[in-house]
Length: 420
Ligand SMILES: [Ca+2]
Ligand SMILES: [Ca+2]
Image (cartoon, rainbow, N blue to C red; front, side, top):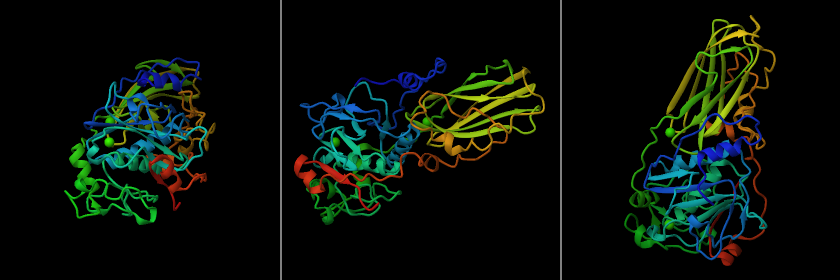
């Protein structure tokens, strides 16, 4: 698979829209560390006979078609946001944009076509002590789990690829089978062996572990810090580019607001606050939504009264950086003085609906076409609160093979979820 540019992503996401895309996202992943972890959500055909090199889509764990992740772009971006949160102390960039060359790590989210899902993470081999083997292709299957569960599965596999071993420490990422939402790579000595799971490689990387801890223990945080160096915070603000209306434009009372969202990180979960103010309005029109991007958003406003207006759009990235843009425009014809269409859609403009577009909402336009005044539902409380509603409540029930059987078949490191 070749490098997918942000522009191509935008074009793909708007193929159902008759209008051409007017916003071009110039974003590139800003490197926040020396290492790169590529996330793949749009499916992948893996190759045989070339080891596990992600640059060539190689895998010894599964050869065939990985199906596209069924979640919305917002849910996928939420998975990435949680991965970035956990990895923040370390020098690694999580991105859906492949670097032009290797090495890099890659985790592919999606069910394996023709094989029953096992519901968890798959790393193709034993722990890679000191990351001596470089990056590999690993997998997260069972992709209807909660976003943070999928994120932690991916990080578990990534941890194996950096010489960490499964543990029984309850809130550590390397714990097998727990589904606690708040977990980290523990900065402290934790057991490297969970007897309940009969992990195949206890003490595999003992030499490294014992630089920090006693026998049969590891310090995940310190080992990763030694390998990767400290992380660099994302301090680059996201951008809002208002495409329409243009500054000073004269419009009638029905118009499309069109704007682009971009950030140095991709994918990004943008919290967007839009406000339209005017003396002609009894109160400002306000909306808050969450979108995965980069992307272009179209929001229709109807029946604006004649008057002078200011449109302000502000967005926040997942590191709490803020960007905003503002234009003034005038409504001259076709408006309806004194009414602002407040009844035409009240009740359907809930943030939950709009911030978690269904998988069918791929036309690149938002569905919030009513723009009712007073729409201050305040759903901007956070990414986690909003995108969890889509595709996240059903736990995978496929149990085709036992954990030990899979180990025997593939010699893989597999983290299977349990305890849901
Ligand atoms: Ca490695
Ligand atoms: Ca940013």
